[in-house]
Length: 584
Image 1 (tube, one colour):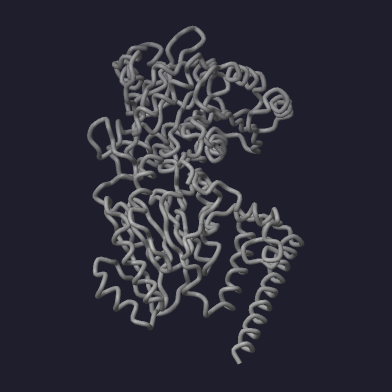
Image 2 (cartoon, rainbow, N blue to C red; image 1 turned 180 degrees about the horizontal axis):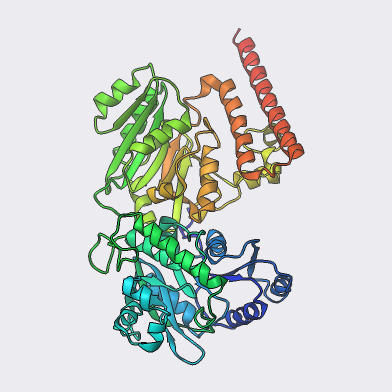
């Protein structure tokens, strides 16, 4: 077996937004292009087309920049586009009218790496005249609302409300914690963004205040980093009179006031939300040690012997961690539920009176699970000792991984093809069960889809992993929800992994944890129904994620899937008749 290595990942995603500021865009991109850094960086520009040639300039002069067009201008909505597409562990949101000083990017990454409970931080920002711009502040209170950017501020600039709001009592040569950071230099930890959510797109301003408020309520820290330095060529609202931007600013402030007010607080702009945690070194977001480390959900339908073997193997699978086992029975009549009650009293048993399907039954198990991680496991599996403990240890150290698949083995110990690339139109004809794959097993389409050419012993990111052994964080469940119950069975794992990637998490194959899987041992007697369900799920996945709402293309795709289903049923019928004739 080759050495286990961690898949590469970008350290920092820099997110810029633009509308009619071509000169500023060129300036910041030139600055970033000549900026020396050791960390790995990508740049995303979300641009509202305005006919000023920004798109063409970026494509010609800065081809490394990931360019996204967005029809509607808005700080929150455009930054959300960047967050959805960013690949870095940290996302640095910058205004285009800034200059990044030497060492800024490396210092930002190093600062966040040293402090895993900092959800966001702001850098040391100065204006063109050298004046310090207070980028990390305290939340507003009544006095600040009255005094900030008002005639009172001009008459009495050192008033106590400004002093408190701008945190003038802090030494800005050293790091410190604050309440919120301004969007001109706004670095967000990906894990925090996944837990807290994106910016509120109903706000044109105050989106930064609102996000930090939610982050602090969730237990994250907001910090000032004095070593990441930028120059901000800022244009203030004050001094411009009462205009559209002023109205938008007031309306956004009112929306934030109303949101917080709805939580039952006495005043709309409270000084600090309670985190419920003490000390500066906070625990990881999903590391509540009062919970089981792993909840394993096993679905069963008249598979008593398989279920018994599976549950027995689970007792030795996680010796260093707390394990919670949930069995969901879909109306078995072979004594399965009685066996679980008598032999495995520690298991949580959910009993259905009928077969609700694989997906809905899994969601029932998910509802009663309480672990930090959750594993969906087929009953025709046997987990090797220590497999889950090793996996939990690895995932605790790699918070960007939202979903993982373990190494599945056939009965003879050979590797099972349990990881895939997302299906394409060509690969749909050459998947695992297709006639073309059986006739031409080494064709390039089948190899690409089944990933038969990838390095088996290497930890690496993949498109999706088999639902026979699917592990994910509970915080992922909080972000994207449970399985889609429109899939009776099949494709629910493809759909879920697709949604995990869309939400910004990684899906990773972990080969050092091994599980035996006896493929289809509990479904052999209902081949016709399962073949129909498989193809129905294929079309449902296509409609949900790939369809362009073109009637002709949808009809063609549906027709191809229907023909494929008919061919597989005909082949199965022919094989059954041939076997029956041979038995005579």
